Length: 199
Image (tube, one colour):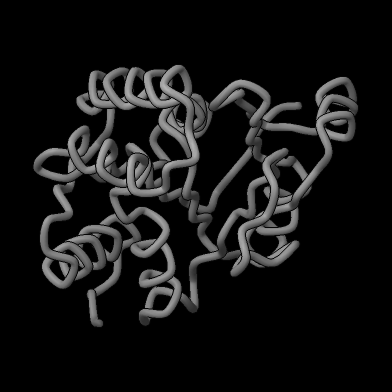
């Protein structure tokens, strides 16, 4: 399926635990929220207690996800961890296109790079990081105590790979102070959309 797209695309990405989703929600709750539409991803992972179907994600079985791959229903998809897949459905893009809103993505690094290549100059990509994202991730995963040593190593390796791709993004934002980061992101996105920023 080809893309003919006049609206602009804003992508938030980066390693797990750097605050992407918090920043995404802040953008939608700011004055920019009136002209931004969030692209809801599909995933095969189980919903967390505070997540809602069709609001945070579309939760699919692995079989349903594979069926959609065969139907060419995804703009992009990725197996982020073994057995855990995420993807952007074409239907989401079409629905947001009809609203005339600019599209906001909160997705993994590999998916972001694919979207950046698809949308070209109509896209601005942000890599959200921390001063020491690898250390933060290890602490976060160890606190959860739900991952085997093998799984923990896979996730750490993924963070290292993601950090190696940060220079492929249009802007790198170190999220060590949430308030400062929120202000910087709103100002940058507003400039990209040709607007005057306001909280």
